[in-house]
Structure formats: C-alpha cells, structure tokens
Amino acid sequence: MSEVENRPTNFIRQIIDADLASGKHNSVQTRFPPEPNGFLHIGHAKSICLNFGIAQDYSGLCNLRFDDTNPEKEDIDYVHAIKKDVQWLGFEWAGDIRYSSGYFDELHGFAVELIEKGLAYVCFLNGEETREYRGTLNKPGKNSPYRDTSVEENLALFEKMKNGECKEGECALRAKIDMSSSFMCLRDPILYRVRFAHHHQTGDKWCIYPMYDFTHCLSDALEGITHSICTLEFQDNRRLYDWVIDNVSVPATPHQYEFSRLNLEYTLMSKRKLNTLVEENLVDGWDDPRMPTIAAFRRRGYTPASMREFAKRIGVTKMENTVEMSVLEACIREDLNDNAPRAMAVLDPIKLVIENYPEGNKEALTVKNHPSDESQGTRIVPFSGELYIEAEDFREEANKKYKRLVLDKAVRLRGAYVITATRCDKDEQGNVTTVYCTYNEYTLGKNPTDGTKPKGVIHWVDAQESLNATVRLYDRLFTVPNPAAESDFHSVMNPESLIVINNAKVEPSLANAKAEQAFQFERQGYFCLDNDIQAEGELVFNRTVGLRDTWAKISK
Ligand code: ATP
Ligand code: MG
Image (tube, rainbow, N blue to C red; front, side, top):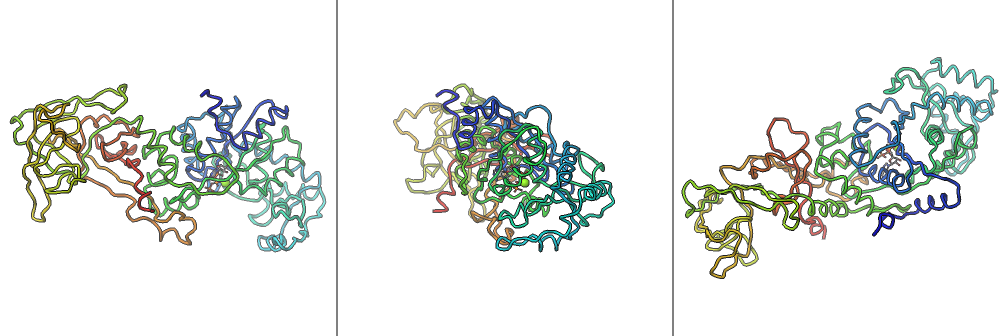
C-alpha cells in the first residue's frame, strides 16, 4: 500500500479535499491550541494527531499555540511539558511557538474596532445581574442598561479598564449581538474582563484579558489558519466565532470544524479533575503511570508509534462515544510484541538448586533477544547451579493443565536446560523456599535423547549474578468504566491500582536498560525502566501492559 492510500479518511479530510479541489484554499494551515493549565492527556493526543497529521499529509503547516488568556490558572511549567509531549509524539510545529498572549495588542485593537462600529460596549452589571439579564434557554434575555452608551463614552471606558482604573468584576466589555438569540453564546457575550494578574508571558503589562471566544477565532485569523479544528462542545460557539470574524478587519477567514472528543473507559479526562488527583497526592504527580497524560504513558513505556496508531484506530467523527481500554492496550501490545527485546525477571523468587550441576561451575548462555526477529541479536545470560524461579511456577503436585515445574516432572528453563524437580524445602507456614532438581546436560538447545519432551518452559535468573529490582504493577486507577459520571470519583478509585514488588530479581543485562525502554519480561508482560529513578544504579521497572487482555475476562 502506498503512503497516500494508507492515510486515514474522515469527514474533516473530506472537507479539506473539497476546499483544495474548489480552490477555496491552496494550502492547509492547522493549529493545536492547548491551554497551559495542566499536562496534556490522551484526548489531546487525538487532537494533536489530527491537526499535525493533516498538516503532514497535505504538505501544510500546523502551529503550536498556547491559548493563554487565563493567567491565574496557567503556568510556564505546563508550557514546557506540553512542548515536550508534542515532540515526543513525533510532530513538529511550524516556526516559532505561538501564544494567544502574543496577540494581545492586536486583540485590543480589534476590540476598539468593534466599539467604534457600535458593536461592543462596557457593561457595569454585576455577575448576578448579568446572569439574570441573560435569560435562559426558554426565556429570552433583556438588554443591558449600558447597551446604548455612546461610542465615545465606551471608548473612554474601555481605555479606563485598560489603564487599571476599574476594579475586577466592576465592568466588562461585551459584544452587542442579540439578547434574544436562541444561541446563548450570542446574548452579548463578554469579550474582555478586568484581572489584576501577573501573566507568564506578558508580565504585568495587561490588567484586562480577552475571553476565549474572542481570542481564539482572531488568533486563528492572524495566523492564517484555514481549518480550525476543535471538539464538539464548541459547536454553538461557532456562531460567535463567525460573528467576530465577520465584524472585524481580519487578514484571513478561518473556519471552525468540530469533532467528538475522546472518552476512554476507566479514566478521567478533565484537566481539572486530573489536577485534583495530583493536588491531593492521590497519584505521584502528573506523570504517574496510572494517569491518562501523555507524560504518564511515556513513563509507563508506551511508544509514540502506539499512541499514533491508537489515534488512527479510533478515527475522527462527530459521534460521542467511549473507547474501551483494550483498544489502546492492543496498540501497545502489538508494537512491543514486535519490537521489545525479551529479558528474564523473577518477581516472586524462590531458590532452585541443581544438585547434579558441577560444584562452582558457571556458564554464559547465549540467548536470543527476540523469538522471531533475528535482527535484535542475542545476549549473554549467566547460568549456574543456583537459580531463582517464580514461586507460582512450582507445585509439589498438579494436574496436566499446569505446564510448569512439578515434583518428579521435567520442564525446560528458558534458553537453558531441561530439569526435573526432586524435592523441596518449606518454611514454617508451608511456603516452598527452595526447590531441588537435576538437570540433563545434553539438553541445551535440544530435546532429551530419550524422546521425552518437556511440556512447559519457565523463566529463571541466576542466583548469584541476578540484580535486585523494584517492579511496579499498575492497574486501572478506577473501578468503574465511567468515573466521570460519579458525583465523587474518590469513591471509585481502585485501591490496587499500584502494587510495588521490592524484591524482584532480574537478569544482569538489564543493568544497561535505558529509561522508558520497553522489555518483554518473559511470561510476565511488558516493562520499562522508570524515567524518574532517584538513586544511581537503582532498578525500577514499570509494567506497561500485561501479555494478554486480562480485563476482558474479568468484565465478562
Ligand atoms: P479538558 O476539558 O480535558 O480540561 P481542554 O479542552 O480544556 O481539556 P485545551 O488545552 O483547551 O484543554 O485543549 C486543547 C485542544 O485539545 C482543544 O482543541 C481541545 O478541543 C482538544 N481536546 C481536549 N480534550 C480532548 C479530548 N478528550 N479529545 C479530543 N480532543 C480534545
Ligand atoms: Mg479548553
């Protein structure tokens, strides 16, 4: 399949195809406009893949623009985190980073233009009165008593607002549109309000800040955005978007198109709620691997390719729906099954002593890094007469379904020999602590000559040479598919969303693991080295995803 045939198709791309065919546009310019008030989440990843993906496929450009008109809630740290996430996903923005705040001078000019045209006025109704005058969906609004103030007076009042002579909440600049419109957003919306707040980009230059609906469309126009793509909750606001564009002297006419936002089962997607999780220390920061943020997925071992693939599979429509977690997990599992090197790690170790192994002997076994991809090469795994195996891989007796180590039965050690268990030691509680076995020295890489073929393969590490590691097993943060529907999400948090194993044993090659690099721990799942390790040389592995979809079974 050629690159072009492989492109996703969706209703937005069809609109663009038509616009290019009709000559309405000669090139495509999109933008991704996050507000720097939190980390980006996987819903934003959908929007990033859509906007940057379109620019890529149509040889157009996509801007990264910080929509920063709420100085109180915003922070420069979020700006840095967002840039990093966009780049990590594999995208490049056109030219310099843009800031809505970079247009504050122009926006002020456009506001003055509206006042001059008699299309905006300074209103002194307080918050409660403004709400009352606005009316409801069933009841038209009433005109503000300040609606007919003269142009000259409005210009003077707006200047006073700008110069810091009005108090916060005392007055606001409003558009003069239609107080009886069936679209609430057209009932003389607020364009500018007074805020004596320090801004992370403009410092203390401004004490009036423009509202989102005024800022966004004009920023789009100033940047020559052709297709301004946003989520469905802005559908009604498109009327206001167009009204502003139609009534000021803009250099270009952008159009807004809406698609349905991503909802993902078992997660919260609102930045406000994610912020609560962080603030209340219910998680270990915005990049805690249980969070749905891009930084968290990165820390957990998800790859940029798997996230782009996810965005492709869920598609772009106008239909609200909730995507199952299994769709996302399938994307990373498929990627890592192909690309993650294998390694051995024992999470719940018990000793395995090979009684007929030559005293003091050591071997360096060569083991394939991937069962089918030769290009991933091999590595050396040390082997001796004392190993660790998983406690759950040994039973004194078991039925035929248990294809692991059983007393008097044979099993293969992955990449090594066939062994037969002979006896075991137990502690006072009856837990097995050491298993004794014999090995068949002729079975390295081949079956026993007596025609027997062991049914199972288990993983192991050398007792002497293995390294201690901490392993974090992550699970869903919530116990219900739609935590956002709960009146209080605290009550549906999964108490077992993180299990920390402190005494895991891993093969020595993992000392060279790099942060965020994924491995398949044989028979356990996919894991990566944590990217926030505190002590030099410490090994902490995060579980990315299990080998199979265990939740599918549970929910059935
Ligand atoms: P939230 O509601 O989660 O706090 P937001 O919409 O306030 O997010 P913005 O920073 O304003 O966050 O979003 C930047 C862009 O990402 C917007 O164009 C927005 O439509 C889009 N976006 C936000 N959430 C989602 C989502 N769940 N799915 C798809 N796109 C999203
Ligand atoms: Mg928003």
